[in-house]
Image (cartoon, rainbow, N blue to C red):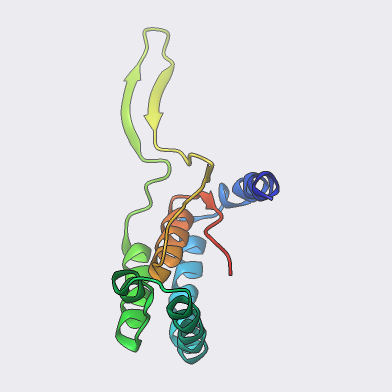
Length: 145
């Protein structure tokens, strides 16, 4: 399963690599809007997650991390909008030299490719990772439910 996810992520990374900054910011803005528009369904799903977590004996500390409230969900959407406002790091020239031959040599920021993330009981991490990966043209496969 992980191998298949990795291959799919690698394939998608090529599509992300050509997205313009404007398109990435548009997608991030829509992501934030949809988090807010679907907040009722998201909070209901979180209630189900919380019930299941309580039934399995999850600690109070982890339960608190898992809990989504309207305020926490609004903060997540706001975090996505903040990522949208960040400068696009891709293509940024870090260093450059003009060689004696006339060739211009530059060190630039480029996407890494595929990123995997493992985490526990933090619904905001999925959105944080997805928005940062989109902004930097990475591809990730956060945990799926």
